Image (cartoon, rainbow, N blue to C red; front, side, top):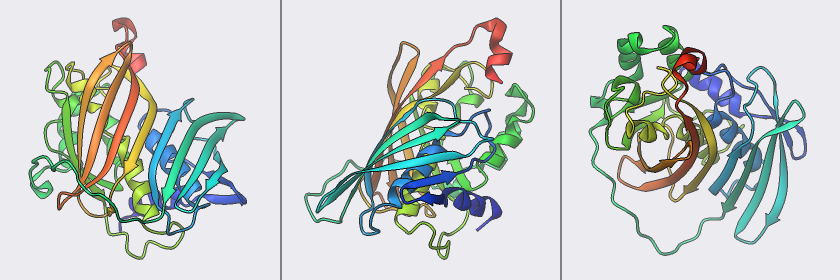
Length: 305
């Protein structure tokens, strides 16, 4: 386990300040706000800390309400909505500076046997045959608004080994492509012996939640030949995020994130994703809508930064 992964695990190990109230901190982000995947993962940790270990999450629905301040702590308040025989429901509100910045509802379920079918896993190359982020990002530094973007992105993703199957949007700016993207990902090191602060499988699910917000809107950008915030041709942010956890997974083993965008309109783009284990099991379904706006040319540099 590298230092970056340990730092991420420490970030998710929230401080309990009351029975159902937790406090978290943030790590530096590539943009001047809290990374959405971080606050979603921390909120799910907070909810999971109030639920029995034999009830992992099976779904979450979340809204990003305000940009988070990375320099201030985030307080997570958990409401125990329902504790049933099979299902448990929790609501979490994340607060900074006296205002809610994020809202999450999550449902947990004891294991049950039942009907079983799934879509087949799409084809994808072996992740070990694909270039790493450390190989790709510096290669395209001339495209970024800020020469330090590559370094900041590498730092932000140092805990995760994330590999694009095809070129990411910032490499093919101006080229309209199919609104579909695939990435392989896993943690940079094994999680065995990671500590008991967050029991598994909750830890694996929260780490996948963290990663799920990194690349999902790429598919929207590809449909319009846009490169993203790093090159300054769009500005945007996540609006809402939903996930369903179908089958067991391990965040320290390769997972294929297959993503596509069915529509964009009204300054918003919709993207959906499927996360498969390396042996073809459909583990997670994801849907997200985000604000995606094209800045005025005169304000491009300022808005992109």
